[in-house]
Image (cartoon, rainbow, N blue to C red; front, side, top):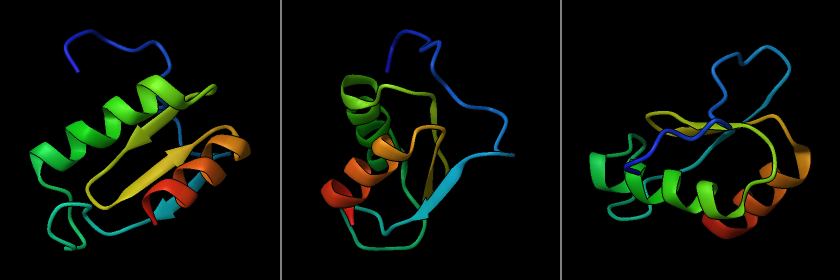
Length: 73
C-alpha cells in the first residue's frame, strides 16, 4: 500500500473486530507481507473504513466485515 487510504479506521469503538489467522503461514500474528496483502484487499473491496491489525481486521461496515470473513476466514 503505497498511498494513504482515507478509509483507514483508527477509532475502534463502534466497529466489528474479526480475528483470523495469517493467510500465508497460519499463525495468529500477521507478518508484514500478509498484513500488506490484507490491506490491499481491503483497499480494493471495502466500502467503509477498516483497519488490519496484527491478527485481526476491524470494520466500520458490517457488509465489509462479512465479505472479509468469507474471503479470509
